[in-house]
Image (cartoon, rainbow, N blue to C red; front, top):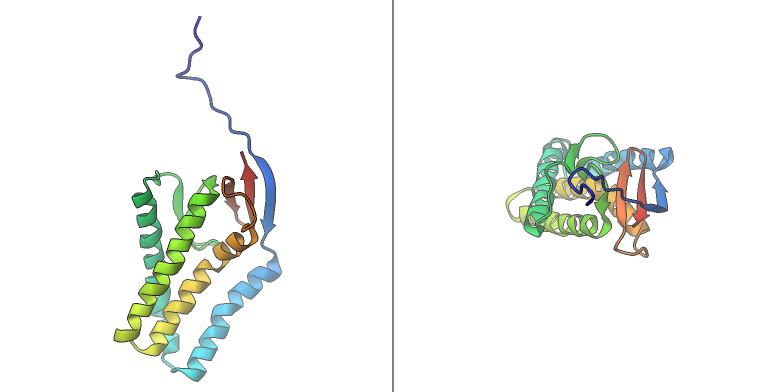
Length: 174
């Protein structure tokens, strides 16, 4: 008798290789970075920087969403139930909901980093320097936790899987 393959469950076994905790001190530093940048922008560029930062934050959020989603669609990966928008620190933005290939996550974030910087650089021509600086600060601030994870995992194999939790990121091998 043949086994019933339609109802058979698939079990994935992942081995935890590395867990990167985001401590409370790191989160408090992360929260103070935009305030420090805002004060520096206000002192050195323009007092309008406060207004520009308020406008730049949702603009950058949307730009990063469009870039990430476009990269995933172009690469042909299913994104319907695997990615979602998070509004809690430190994973603000468009993030994976479940296990995600490290290679795919790295590719999406690096595209997001470079294309986002290029888009912010385009604003130099048409907008005040304070707004462009606000765009760059918001862009880098939103990507900082993800880039930190990529930096910490740079020596690991690209074939692993990532899982993001509220206070940490875990790297697994299959």
